[in-house]
Length: 406
Image (cartoon, rainbow, N blue to C red; front, side, top):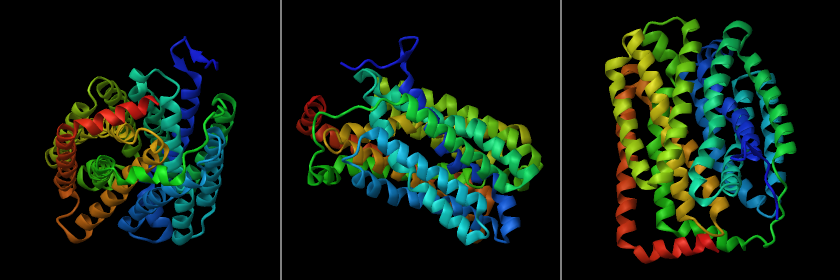
């Protein structure tokens, strides 16, 4: 029997190690939001072109997640996590050294390849460290690394970019990657699976489950609305609200604080009632996004909006991740978990692209909120459809539950 080291007998230290890795990866994903204007000026591209660095990263996640998950399926999970963190660190080093926009985009894509599989495999590892009734909370704890990245990493990156140039932020993230690799290597247990990996055909069979596909679609569209707005938060605050560039960094701290609250809240709600948590968080997110039109014009209201957006956006993560894990129970969990991380990032890419279209060819920055809300409501409609299938197929639900216990 393996004993897992815990903090105060409650939280496995391995979860904190996973959180450290999530912090590093989350920082590199989100730091570009606070650097758009500096990158745009230095590399002589438009703000919307700089915003596509977010879409490029997200699309890299979408490709890397299933490919690397399948390629590494026979390797120990700790080995996989360490290899992915090495890719992440080298990719950020390439970002810091990129001489032009094209090379920066390529480096961002290389870095992103590690993202989906890290969170997918990490989610499975996290749920295996705790009792079944705390699975959603374990996922939320690991994803706290993302909230900490937004709370600390993104504002720090924005501050570094303002004072020392945008490249300094990527040098800092490279150092974070080295530290995260060390923490993971020490604290994540190297568990030997007694069973051989399931045949590839069995893992891929998860993609034939309608509920898994609906869960992935729900994630893409439910989360896309967040990045319609968040990708362009710097120009929103400076050009619409009228704040200075130096004010952006502390306001991003407010967003990060909201993420921390929303992430833990979503985990608690999902532990109690998973689908109710999905519905409630998506409704709350749509309401907050729709309210941007009325709040972004004045500094105080804009700060409140940013905080509420942080809470509402990450409250959706644990419920939607748990939903896919439940519907993929059995041999396809690793792949489905990674694919759902890819789905979050497809939502990021879609949101950043839609936001750019609205700015360049539509009604402009002020309209981003209501466009984002409409996309999130489509995700809510898919969630309602999925729930209706639950009621029609009780036998399939029982089979899934039985598979989860094998």
